[in-house]
Image (cartoon, rainbow, N blue to C red; front, side, top):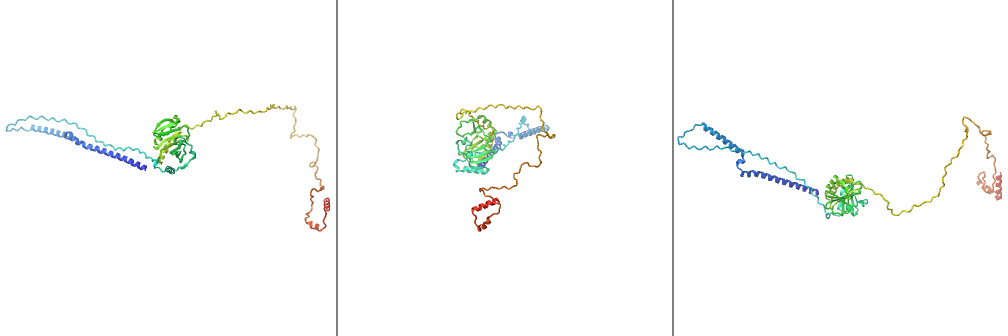
Length: 427
């Protein structure tokens, strides 16, 4: 509807310009037609038609000259009647001086139809908070994210303490966040403490804070910000004036010119550039904010990068104690190694070689292959004395099947069994 109203307004302005042009043209035509009638009342016909009058005067002169020649050749007639008194000849009429021909009037050049000046687009009326239903802005953000294939999330815990300036000075956590990438930069659109805010990552963190506020935007002053300049309807503040002046170039000027009127402030903090809007911003405004914020994010690379503070321990938290001394036992001094005195014989020893055999000592001849060690076993069976401490093993078949035969006979007494066993061993 906003575009339709804008087109109707442009057509109305063009129509008004055309009607104004036609009115001027008709007035000029009427003035041109009325001019000859006004001249006819004032000047003489000779002034109105100078060429015709000149022709008539020339013809009268020629006719007068011819009449004089005819009178000279004709004989004079004698009139019987009393001669009429001769009239004095009328003085010859001197020809009137030829009036200078007036220059032909230049044709009136019709004014070229000038194209109506391009009307400046009227600012779109912003919606008021009274016309917004609860949650309408959230639905608009969600729809805008779906249209551009961005990601929408209700909250993000990593962004809670990301910023501390501008709309984030109240410490409110961002919500209803739209996340995406535009012009090579990470982009966020969110509700920051009830203020619609768009953020774009610059890529390099900086300690310098630059704050740009539109004329008429009132906010609490920051004591660490210094005024730098006024440009394109924005007053620029910064924590350091020099880096901020070097950052402002054609990209910054173009971005500030193209920012929609709904943007009230822009600030650079850490590795982000953020722009907050007034109430009533619409998706059309968000689309217009993307390109200018991309230019500002590129220009932020001029700011000096962030420097890490070096930890200093000049003021420790507590006093350090005296150094602890460790008692060490005296160690004996190590004497230098004394090399023994090596006395070499005057005549070198003759060592055996493989080419010349030598014999040293006495050798007793013996048979080759004989064994000088006596054998451990001589082949004779040795009796083993059984003292009753263990059961002797007999090399006989098992006697379990001899129980019946033994049971049918007389029972042997223990003494007889013992004697029988002894005789068996002796055998």
